[in-house]
Length: 443
Length: 183
Image (cartoon, rainbow over all chains, first blue to last red; front, side):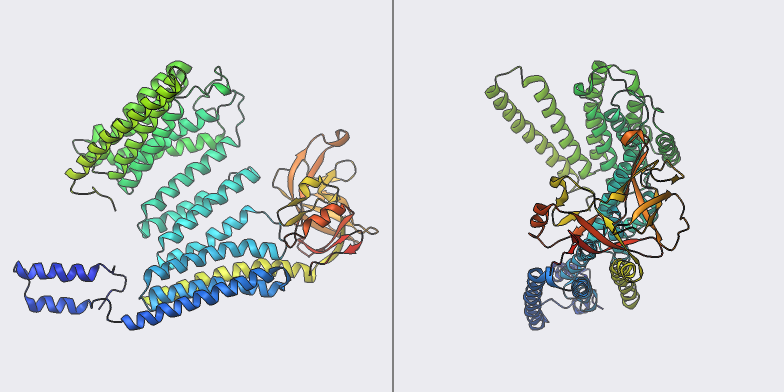
């Protein structure tokens, strides 16, 4: 039985490899022939495929003509015709996509693209229907309907693109909903944890899972910042930075405890923690040097409850990590604990000591993060770590030398440093990747 | 396996179609069954009136002053769903009460749902004020047809339908008592 989802490279690869197996005496020539019979080479249905291509091209031309016709006459068309055109576009894209990907199976890539297009048409349809009927209801609800509508499509097709779309659209929904109504929008975490995260695990999409985690962070921060009640100047940068450190530390701990995809959790957790440390290397002078850093529990009950959940999660992950044992557990646990300790120490530091401390911590954290990536053969973490190192170095170079040097010298020296540093970093990166045998654990 | 996937996929597409149809059906239901009320729009900054291809409508009943109209359950929270009682007038309907629960209405009244935009303890002349949205604040017009209406800056009024659930939908738009048609 032929699996129609096999990539095109499969057949020639199988032909050459099975030939090698015969020569190596692993299988007989008869066995090779029997195996190859299971996977007929593409091109057997070439004529049929050519016809299909022409049919598709024809459909596209007709479709373009229909779209142009509707676009030109949109204002004068009756409402039911407009709605009918929208529904036809949605159902047509989905139907043809499903046919090509699953029924015919000959163009899974194109079929997948059409299913994704159907999800886009559906989203556009929400706004168009609202326009047709002059609906001026709660506008963030449009994003919610969009996200809710496409999640079942993911469940049916395992489409990663549609899952990305749904995760992004639901993220836009909570940002607009929380900003517009100043509510906590509790449905968002329920939806993320109850539906999107399981779907991400099911389709094995590390990026979508990272989207869920980041979405929850954004949801939490908007909830915190839109309900600030203390009067200690403008505490927002510090609250965001501190929460980035804590959240990043929690995600790193979860990654170390292998509660999720290690590559994603190391990447996201480290990036968030370093972003938090990076924010704290600035003076924030335009907000006033003397502004006070709010204490850890200075936020609302929502903030403190979120903090408690975060700490509880970290402790649970740390317990799992500890029980798992292993010689490197202490070093790894310290990697996760560092951002937490940094976050806790924040309120005891004045402006200059704080900037110096977090510059050093950022440097140490970046080196530690890259070391972790090398140790665990995590290419994503190594690349992100190197990028963080470059951003940090460039920022400090601009801070320290922009006014102290003539501009021409500043840029020439900066350029030479960039070129030299980039060459060195890339050489080391290649050496590490080479030692891993080509790409580490990248999926 | 395929048929199970096919059924699930079909159900997902049907859900989307129903959601899209539901949006239009709900509006059509309000228009077909709702009671017609004529509402006067309040003047708006001409630079604000057109955003893209729709007319931004601001009604007299969008800002209601305490003291003029009884407000039950005030103060109201941003985003809170409340009820406004409208009484038939000549030609425009006027607000006669605001409440956090659905009120009883007389024969010449309707109760309309509204969402609180913001509440002011001390608005005009120190009286409390609530700013509301009814979901009928936008009227889409064909591209390029908005500016002539903006230039007129005349009396714009709206005939809205209010259904038995208190939901409103725009039925007709009038400029100086003449209905405007775009097709």
